[in-house]
Length: 107
Image 1 (tube, helix red, strand yellow):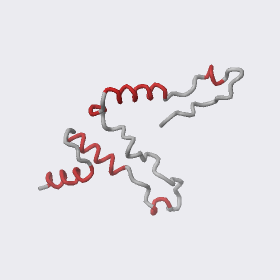
Image 2 (cartoon, rainbow, N blue to C red):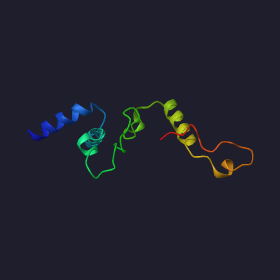
Image 3 (tube, rainbow, N blue to C red):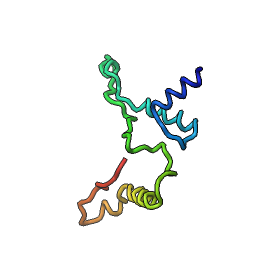
Image 4 (tube, one colour):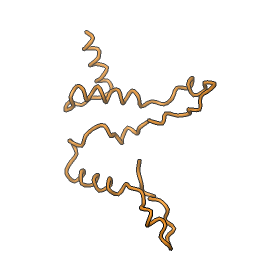
């Protein structure tokens, strides 16, 4: 009875046939954690926390591996990952440049 209830709760959050049970448990936990901060905590007397800093975008999911992606998509993602770096200091402090940071950098 308890296992059935737990499975139902997990399927409510994530419906993925190809994932293992442990992966589904982990993804369900991550989904539950991805919520805004409750107001009662936000307006507590001695707290400076105003938002959930660990909140993730649902479309940018770092927890699902790239097994289902096509080869071209994987190549494109690898290229974007290589480009997502800060500017080197030698370039930032070059004599006639105004560029100080990588404007296309993603989180």
